[in-house]
Image 1 (spheres, rainbow, N blue to C red):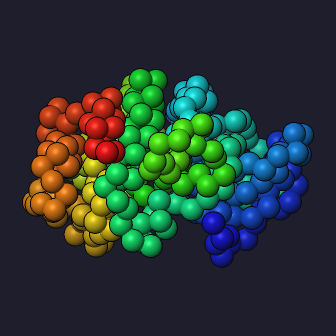
Image 2 (spheres, rainbow, N blue to C red):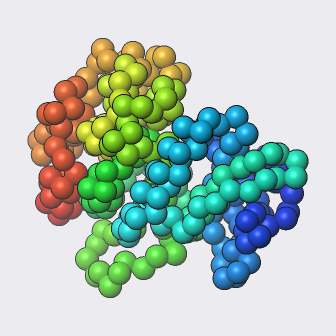
Length: 286
């Protein structure tokens, strides 16, 4: 991923350990940099948050959720390696998350080259459903599942698998994730990207595990068609989602239609859990 136009903070090592090199991306919850762990001499991804205006409650929530995220271990989740805080010479106090650096394109870039085959879409979705199931089992809701937060891990092997198709993917950016216990307290305006929000998120309600399933359904539909289901600005996208149900082209068959319509049901309680989604997608890989 090429660096974006941005000034890299002073090159003193954060926490006396992480040397920032170049910006990889920017979002509402922080900036992501490529960095070097000078202690272990390895490349990492470091997400930086300005905390100068944060309240004590914000800091406690950040620390709690960072601890929860550090317990997630799954081959399709970006690993959280470290958390810390420091003061930038020209930027004030910051907190940071240190994650494994996954070299590869995003799923968004991959889809831009053309839709994926149904078999490959099923395998990508199966991996993401299993990853979400693991996160939900640990009490973590991602809240921002979208193609640009899915990395196609070109540097990872297929783990000895010989069956095709196989495109290893990793779900990244838990920057606005919440624990199920803290979801009702999550501030509004930090609940995912409008084009992939569930109806409850679009209405400003707390996001639960079923919200991630809805977003994954939209991601899979985009993989199949190459087109976002709800494009446009945030208001247009949100209104369209509340007024118009998802449409699955008939050419993909009854099984795909049944699964995607279930995943994107308006009622969160009607959506299948990730384990069921993964099982259905495993059958659709043929």
